[in-house]
Image (cartoon, rainbow, N blue to C red; front, top):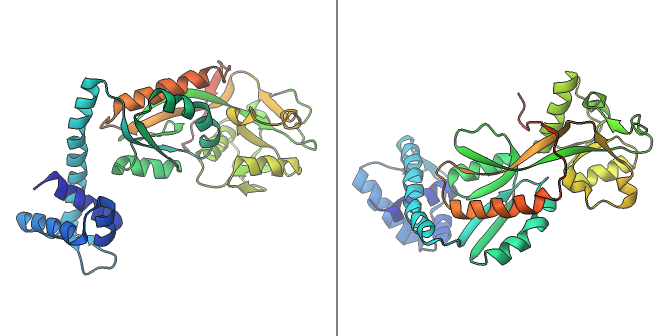
Length: 312
């Protein structure tokens, strides 16, 4: 049994196809198939049910894949240990970022990080929180930036910053003339939300639940992007809540529609998260230090109350 054979098994389990798995591993399909067959012969079991389309894992195959993932991750730690001993910060690093953080945070830190750590080859993807957790657990991401807490036993979280909620209120809204808001002023029935699947949406809903115990959640409109929510609000279709960093690039006319909360301001915790195996920690720490450094000056709020993105 070799690490290479286990990596081939994991590739087939992921792609459910020997040809695609071989392409992913940069080997020929006969080579990959032969190595998996040798492993099955050695173990005297079938890992894959080849009669199914797409290929499926057998029951024992599912257990083998789970263990193989642990073994491959642990084998990667050897190079990781050597890199840390040498103080080397480089190599490929796969980072996921949630959609409500990506457009504002990435421009703030990316150039600084690339200039400081030119040997790191960043591969960045915009992913939902659910996708991020799955890919961290499967070893397809090294780390991610997401709203926390996530309450996952397999994921570790290191807070980067605390980002307040800011209300964006159109001219015809009932709260237009209120200088400072209380969370008790919020009503889900006249609020524009991101569509289902966004953790920022969940945080807003929890904010209203915690402080109003409102049950009849009927929404006028839902959208896939914060920019669309702003445009819909400008049309008088309701108010919305924005993450604070999204407000920095608004026009002066748009900023006139911003309303802040009384202290403590409701906020979300944004963290760098990674698998409990703690691979590539030297790069994770470098990312954390770079991001925290650039964001600390942008967010002057100190008195905040964290709203979890996870429904209780």
